[in-house]
Image (cartoon, rainbow, N blue to C red; front, side):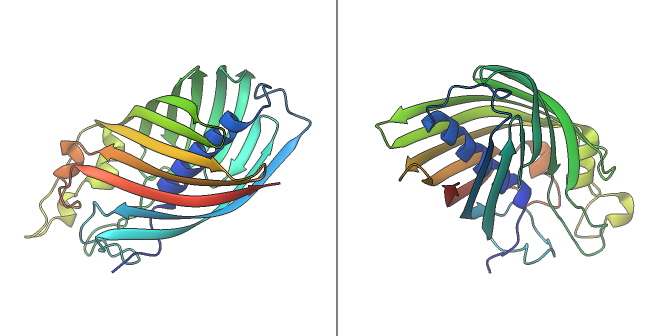
Length: 260
């Protein structure tokens, strides 16, 4: 069975960041993030995402399927240094296209509903980041108070052209989560343990990530994108009774956008 509602935060974020970065690469405009305050940008689109399911016994909207599928409506609105979309809200504070400080609020985590366990849900995370040329660092904290989690990410992003129409965004990075985040999303409390589900208390963990997103500029306004995202899963995640023990989370994303 294929799931129709998956973790939108992760996959939509991956898609939009990849696409917007490709848009920046193919644009001839050289202004910094705080230089375009007088202009606004709008893009609409549609995408699909396929992801292997790392969870087991998830009762959330067909979450026991081996392959998860989702329709992704893509809407992105930007006004100068501020952008709002499915990836959340970001605001560049200082700097330019090469070096900048910014704030971000976004939803993080996924939904896990298991019989006999308290439901786990995604949550709003607020944080600050720094972009330094190809490096991007972000530190954010759960402001909903669900997981009381903290996440820190650092990514190395490279944009390069393959001819006049095709541009590629590749990235590699590390994502780290504190013990509270790990406990909320992958832990099993004493009152949730059963004969088939042991009590489990994971520690803080870090995991490697990589992505490869080619983009095709069909016209000045229409763009197509496909990409692959990989995330290695550490023991803290793999040994959880809520997961199936797989060591790799994979996502395939296809989509198109129309820029106004």
